[in-house]
Length: 243
Image: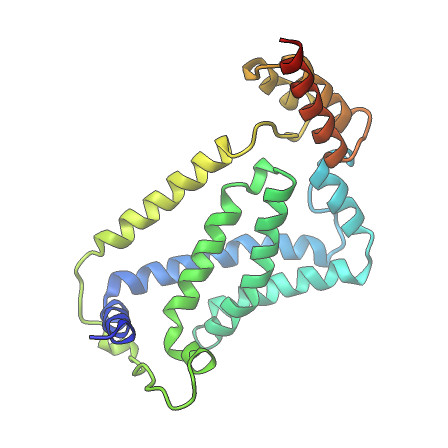
């Protein structure tokens, strides 16, 4: 049996399992709930967060807020993707529209080391990927060469299997664990949301003085994230050379 045939077999079995169907609906609702309020805030023209302008993400969002109708456009796109996800006939289109938006948010969160979405954004990307895989029977026509055998469409009434998908549950739990672990340990230092929060992490650093300077650079002096991070790493290297 070829890899494609094996995949199709596993895929068809999953589509017939009611637990996968329930999990799919859960992902769609959860993702929609994540974008509807966020999009609405942008549509009505309000600032998305109350982060200080000196905070890296706060600086970005403040600039984004002043882009006029582009800011509104992003909000409309988020709300449209969320609404499409909630409608069965348009859920596939919603997942396609949702993916580039949430992927951009995820990369942004990692780039500026923002704790507020360091866990949720990667999990939302994974949930979106799962939805795209769930709709593989529709998207396959865009992905495979012409003439390839399509995966048979399975009507909702064909849900027959009720065996609990242990592997899916384990993968779900592990993805949460990995996201939490990476959010807590992936970076040597984070700007945090406030000066007090930023300095609180300095107690556990090998060079608390350099850490406090980094926090002051970000939240008080208003240096860019790249400049503050470079000064922090230089202070660490200098301390090591002295020793």
